[in-house]
Each structure stands twice: as structure tokens, then as C-alpha cells.
Amino acid sequence: MDSKKYKSYKPTREEDYIKFYFDNSHIRYQEQFVLKNLRYDSKKHRRVDFYLQNVDVYVEYYGLYNSTKEKRFEYDEKTKVYFRNGLPTIIIYPHELGILDYAFHTKMIQLFNVEKFRNRRNKYYKYLFFRYFHKGEWITLFATVFWAYLSFVFGWELVQIDEGLNAIFFLISFVLTIYNLVTFSTDLIYFIKHKGVLE
Image (cartoon, rainbow, N blue to C red; front, side):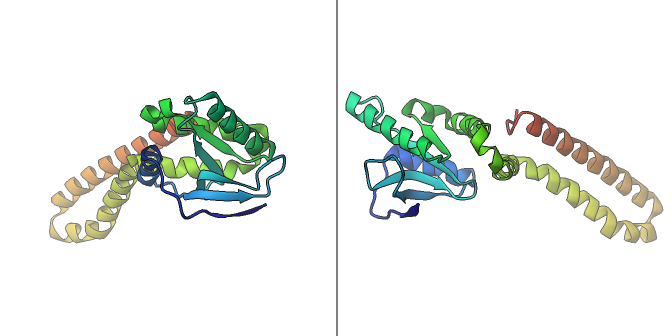
């Protein structure tokens, strides 16, 4: 299977919106990725809207799916080709743009639960890991490390200056560190159990 990136293409506004979502979600992608010599295909090549190289997943936006019967048939034929070639593909429809994060993430979970894609679970967990931190939970981890660092670096100096001040500082540092660790661990467990969904 030969593939390359197709360059001379101007994306639609909807595709730009999906690009914006990927950029803000820190999901790496290639646009208009060309797949050649697919099996069971009447065409010599296919252009995929997005190829997510970190997770090896293809994403198509079917913006004209409901425009005509001919267009819908064309989209359906493309989908069949992808599936018959065993390509991990996510299809986004126009009505899902308003809930893009939910739609994309739900379909990602469903995709990696398909039997033939379960051998790619390492890519799935990598996706979940980065989704967790890019949703803002890295702040909790940073706060934990920061307070632990302050306790270690400045603790001894405060002992030499004022034992009472040192006790107060360490008490505050200890409480904040434990709180942040518990919060981080609780959120992480919830995240794993709910497969990447944060409240």
C-alpha cells in the first residue's frame, strides 16, 4: 500500500474547524493523505481528509452526505473500501460538528474496541494519556511536584532561620502535596474507568 500527502487542496470551513479541534486537542495529523492501490477499489487512489499518525487512524468528514443520493452512495462506497482494507477509520458527519469532541472521542473508543484493532491498544492508551493531560489535569500534577520541590529545597534553610516558621511551611506543603496527590490520583482513576471522559 503506497501513500503520500496530497498538497494542492483547499479545505472547507468545516474541515478547518476539525483542524482547529485537532490543534487545540494536541492531536497530530496530516491533511489529504493519499492512499494508493487499495484492494477492492475501482479507483487508483483515495484521499483521506486527515491521517492521525500518532494513533494510526484515518478521519473522514462527510460534509455532503445528505446532499444527494449519488453523493451518499459515493461516500458509502468509500467507507466500504476502507473497512474492507482494514483501515481504522472514523467518520464525522455535519450534525456532529456541534458536539465534535464527544463524537470524535466516542468513535475513537468504539474503534479501538473492534476486535481486529485491539492489537493497537498501546496507541489507544497513548491517546487517552495525552487527552487527560491536555484537558488540564497536568496543572494538578505540576502543583504537587512544585510544592514537594519547595519543601525539599527551602525546608533546611527555614530550619536554620526559624523553627516555628519551618513547621508552618512544612505543614502547609505537606497538606497541599497530599491534597494534590489525592486529587490527581482520583481523577486519573475516574478517567481510566470512564475511558477518557472527564466531568
